[in-house]
Length: 88
Image (cartoon, rainbow, N blue to C red; front, side):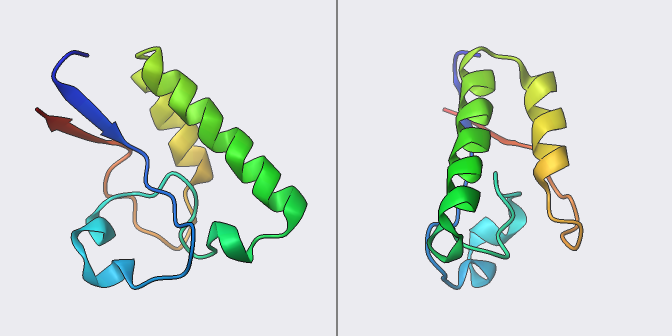
């Protein structure tokens, strides 16, 4: 995995990400609701899911990551990328 960067974007607060290059990247959590707008328990669950994705990325288990991210994708978003990998 040397030379690659995994990006797991999370919408912490409401913003206009749709007009940026981030709109082409699948978010780690559904972007229709920012972390700030989630209730306490929903926020806790979101951070647990994100920590699982980070753990999988660190362990190099991309197949598990793709499965995990696909399960977390909001149904109204067209799946463009399961994960973004950038060569450094």
